[in-house]
Length: 208
Image (cartoon, rainbow, N blue to C red; front, side, top):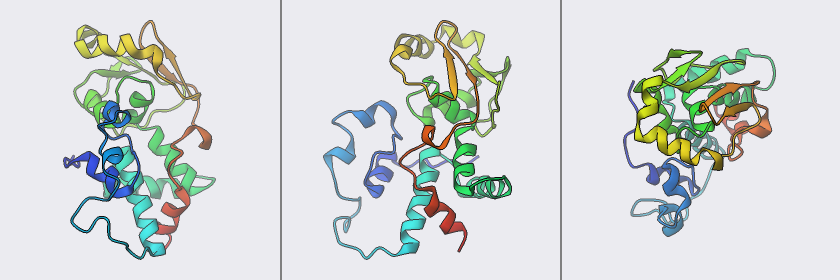
């Protein structure tokens, strides 16, 4: 499936905040959001009138870029969220959080969701003992994510194993640091999901 391959830091500058698209670089002084406060482009620093539609569109695009989802797939996720009981906005974020690539990122196996997507696509991650190379696969309560046996010999695995103690794991996941495997304990609550997103604006955008 096609993916955005342009400069990730340009997206963060456009939204005026760190979206953690580059992993470790985002927490260093080299982060372009820190070094250059204005949006990209020749007229980035110019004042612009912001409409309600513009705010909704910007929030929807920001959510897409944070989770690395293209428009068509994002629309499918939202359509599914609308059919579920409860608030559509929270349902949408819950679906995005339960994607395999996001769970791999949340478990600390990767520094960014982009890197987590590569790990899954290259067959390094197993779900319940079976290799799964589909990043958009939705996990469920009780599923176990682990590294493929052969991947435990790679330099990346050794680096992750060395730094795993410093990772903060959300409460809806559990991590076995010895075997470097994780389990889904439950569906995430709103307080355990991405806090920088205002899902109400996303719902308003699709409710026009």
